[in-house]
Amino acid sequence: LGSRGSNQSMLARELRARGRSTRQSSVSEWMSGEHYCPGWFPVTLDEIYDLTEEEWYELGMAFAYGQRLSREDIEDLRGFREFYRQQLAEERAHEESRR
Image (cartoon, rainbow, N blue to C red):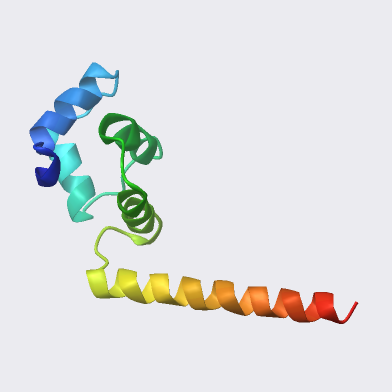
């Protein structure tokens, strides 16, 4: 939020303006991982801040795996995903070459 000139209170106000009953403490609890954030939150956050692809990816990882992942864990997950994607592509190419 800070890199966008915003903070938790400003985000909560913007969410309320969009019809979401949200307090600053709720935003704080979601960001710290004390409570799970609601399903509408990632899409609404993207609508508000027009997230970059990297920000959207990190938000998705936090939403899927919990907000307490360290940057190293996120990089490990990203590396695994890239490795696995490559493995699947190689297997698919091998299967197609056998046809």
